[in-house]
Length: 261
Image (tube, helix red, strand yellow):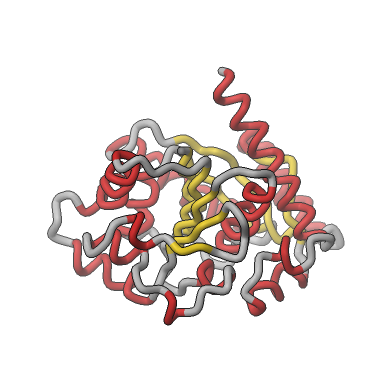
């Protein structure tokens, strides 16, 4: 089971869109996928059509010890893809756990128990909140790697340097095996010179860590969550869906190369 945190401390960069549609693309080729919604807004849950009333247990319950990962899992409309929902209670995790010496390891311990019980997935994608919080740290400590969505907009490099510093801090003190799985450029607008400038700058800075696939600005990607569907189910022929299918293929190739090495 490969656990990947989809993280960036900046909001509005496409983390949830990436978790939803990358997960769906992986499931479409037969991978068993679990998406863990760790954002208090619960947008990944909404994007899969899971109504708040159906979220009996959430990632909040897992983090505070009121439920196991297995108890919180819900089926989605996507074959091979399950979800652990998020809800507004996640906003209170910081306060509730602040005096717990194991506060940063709650999710890792939950995954250890999950594996011990014989549960398994090919890929787990954790949709992280847009902040450096106890929840984000838990996600990184529990993960094998971090996938960083980065918008092709002004100040993108500032956001990138922040998340890279956070990854290094987690690696130094809490999870020495944490890797940068890759950086995926999002909200790319080919009509905008700035998009090309940002893409070029990021590739110069991080080289092969940056995915060749870029995710374009696309209305259908924005519309799909309001219908409770991943864009790949809502309109699989739109440019955004096609890009996420290509991203999944590229991710699987990277994973094959990692295993072979």
